Image (tube, rainbow, N blue to C red; front, side, top):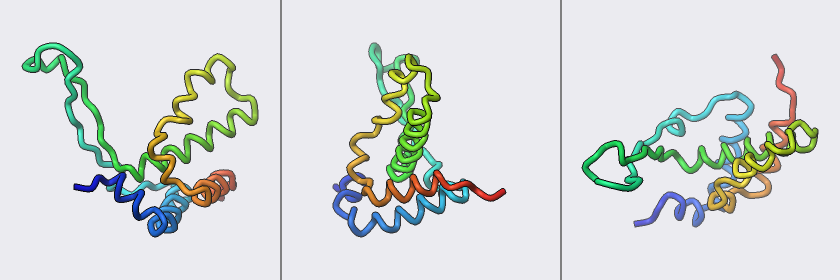
Length: 127
């Protein structure tokens, strides 16, 4: 059985232009596809007795495409904050994970998609 991530990697050349259009449209309109907002909550045993609910923590499984969009937006925001010296130096360390978080998904993002999304984010929106 092929995972969604594996399928995206295998089809990345064909899928990248479509995802780029969806990401660009989502950023411009501030609307995320409704399917990307859905999550499946799975209980993960932390430790202890499997029969006690308090020994579990909920994990939210969301769409990989939405995680990639989140990564694009987070990296753009972090770049802006760093470039403009907006972050307090001690806070940068705690926020580094936000920038490098979904490393396994970053290989799916073409430089063209990231570049176009950054350009879209930097454009002023008309109100």
